[in-house]
Amino acid sequence: MAGHFGGGVAARMARICHNRPVLHQKKVGARETRAQLDNTAKRAAAKCLGRRARRCYPSFMGMKADLWRRGLGSFFLLAALGMLVAGKTLLRERLSAPAFLVFWLICLLCTCLALLVAFLDVAAIRRRTREEQRALLENTLQEIARQTKSKSKKQAEQDESSN
Image 1 (cartoon, helix red, strand yellow):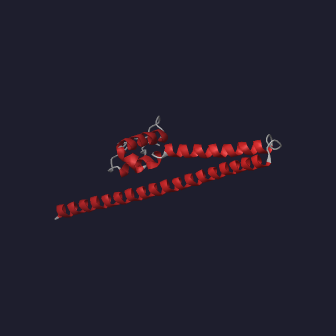
Image 2: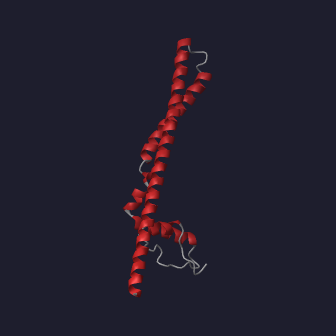
Image 3: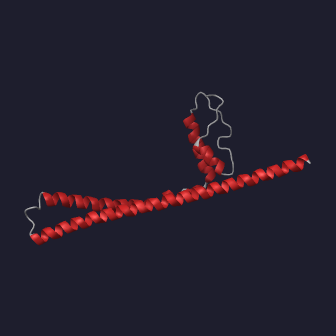
């Protein structure tokens, strides 16, 4: 593998960051594996992107809300499951008719709340995915525009130097 250069995803990320080289043309030797070079490239690209990386990838910003939502959904689901087991085994003979009805209505309410939280979680994930795709598209279009502008400047400079 000698003579090959590292790259991969991190190299593409670095191209977004003003075309700075990630690995400075470091060759893959006998001791260095491609995975090690890719890790080096990822760290270099993350350092290169700096604050911009946090704006480009907003998925980490909503993690606390996701944890709360999923914890709440799990609580309601476990409560409904516990009530189902208790209602079918322990409380089957002990509950009077009105208590029986209230018990199963509360179980139904816990199940409906678990479903509601699950639908809210799906909606939040879809919204975040849509925002990330929009940000990626905007960044890609800006990068294409910047590359086109730099190519046109280079072309103009070459035309002037040839005249």
